[in-house]
Image 1: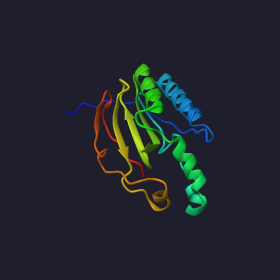
Image 2: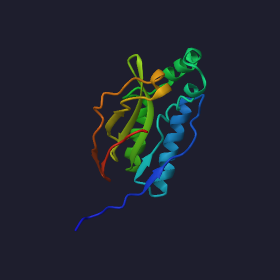
Image 3: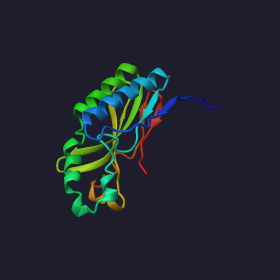
Image 4: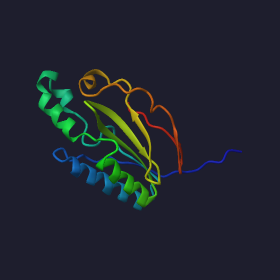
Length: 163
């Protein structure tokens, strides 16, 4: 006989604040509160939600996107840093697991990264997209597969993948 646990999850679908990375983080924190009030134990955000998905890469040729790319780089998330601290505090205070997609800045590169925070607020997984596709290669570096694993949380073992 298998023992099954039902987990209430929230898939957050909100728009980022395109001109304010801090504004996007505020929306993330509020969405975690709102989801927890509705009984969510797992709160999941879209791919590279913070500060925003680089839609410019779809519509501008690489040679014309440099200013947008630099803007994304300037507002990208450093791990650990203020964004991870804010999300960790929300996860801890509400006792929920959070999966957050970010544009991560590490040294001179950007990565399409998913972060998993457990219910204690600990950052238990950082997974970088291994092979960005088509135009994404002009934005993000390749991940190294070190985040391709599952982690234990209070709701069970979870992992993360993006497209």
